[in-house]
Amino acid sequence: MTVFIMSFHYLLSNDPIEPSVATFADDEGAECQFLGTVRGEEDGKTIIGIEYSAYRPMADVELARICQHAQSEHGPHRVEMQHRLGFVSVREASIIIRVKTKHSALSFELCRWYLKEIKTSVPIWKKPVFAN
Image 1: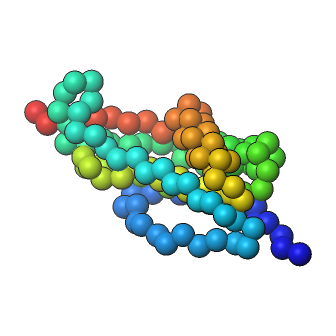
Image 2 (image 1 turned 120 degrees about the vertical axis):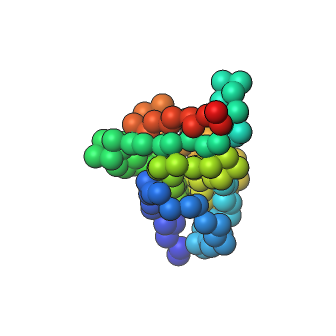
Image 3 (image 1 turned 30 degrees about the vertical axis):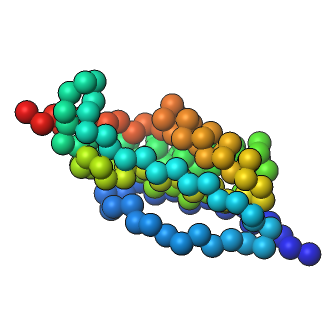
């Protein structure tokens, strides 16, 4: 009998987002990955990057709450997330979300759900740095 792994890992960091090789537990058949990068334009104006900041105590609590809610509402799965803090240049990754589940449909659904929850409830702010 195999036991499906329920776990979550999140990181708010100034460190660059590094690629990683997917590894799967016996009961996992799908990984969906979202990688968001900084665009070269904000509100129609050219930017050189975005300065991200967060209220860490509240952000950590909210990220844990989101992960726990997802586990109880959507069943066992693994999720890894990293959101950059500090200055992130254009074309660099600012967020990554990796969701591993038994089936692909749930993996896609959860990846989108996590992104929406992070954007709407985690106190992370962005300040565009304009070219001029």
